[in-house]
Length: 121
Image (spheres, rainbow, N blue to C red):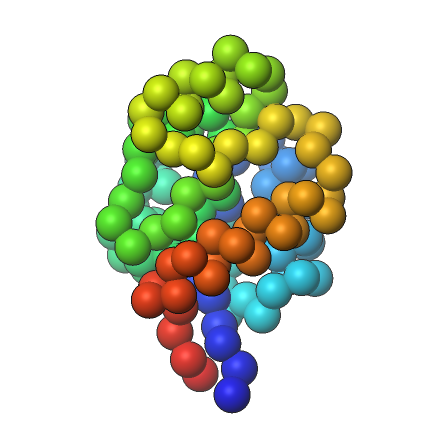
């Protein structure tokens, strides 16, 4: 039985959105990946699709926050942003330049932790 995951990539940079999309499709069975570049569209996507995973940048995270039943991974540029995200209660933070293998491991861990949000085909 395959497990499928719905994910949201909420990142302002088109290049980073595309790279994360390719990474998710290459490493995890993805049912659907939604991509947004602003907070309002991200909120609409969260309300409509209830993704199991949200990868977001620091700016969008500050506007969207965390959502029930959605595992959040915040991508930041530096330690100051990392500390600010952690201060808001989110420990799943990746600093730009983190090795891809570490990012994939973290995503798998988040999805396993939120297994109640993952749907079976």
